[in-house]
Image 1 (cartoon, helix red, strand yellow):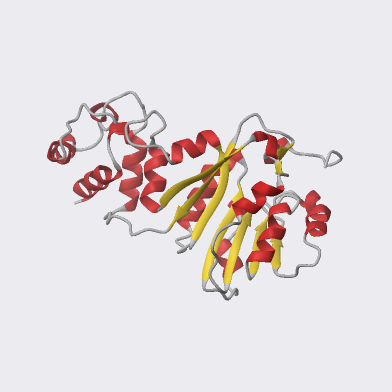
Image 2 (tube, helix red, strand yellow):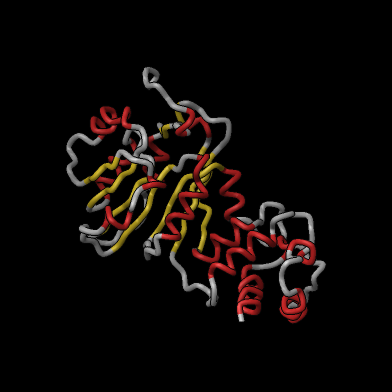
Length: 262
């Protein structure tokens, strides 16, 4: 690997700890399943996915890893690799002719585009069986944060509205080459019965605006909204307009969204 030209612009830190790779794929898999891998790198994770799933659909932005990737996949033929930017790819078209019962996502995500990738997966409106990704530990702490803690923010509410989220295990920076400056964490997202929200656009905007200035109260962050309606919901839940967004659970944001959407 020392001879490979690692590219900072792609956030290339390849997972080289075989034990961690095996731990990531240690999940129950349903029959006739496809897994999507975003950022295959040199294929160390990909080959384990090939041995576990009926088919692997991989995305890799760096064509220069092709030889190393295909060398690691020698002996397997149940994969399709798209050398393209996942964020620009029409994933639904890529899946159009695939036959499967369950769809999974397992990936070591590039740190610098973790949130856009998760947003894209949500916007695909696919009923994923499981999404399991490795992310920067700081991001994982935000995703899994509890109400009232410093890490609790708009990303927490957004992702927890869409999934049941579970923090799996921490991965040391020493498990990668080249070694990044931070540790990572593996997080799993499971499908859930969502709270009924009348207008998702209003709901997502409300979340962004509520956390816009983290230390400000809802009264200050939501000046452009009907504060009387918001106050009704808050008072019924034991809060008032002086509350900060980080103190409110997901359910309250859903109630406020539905109230102002009427």
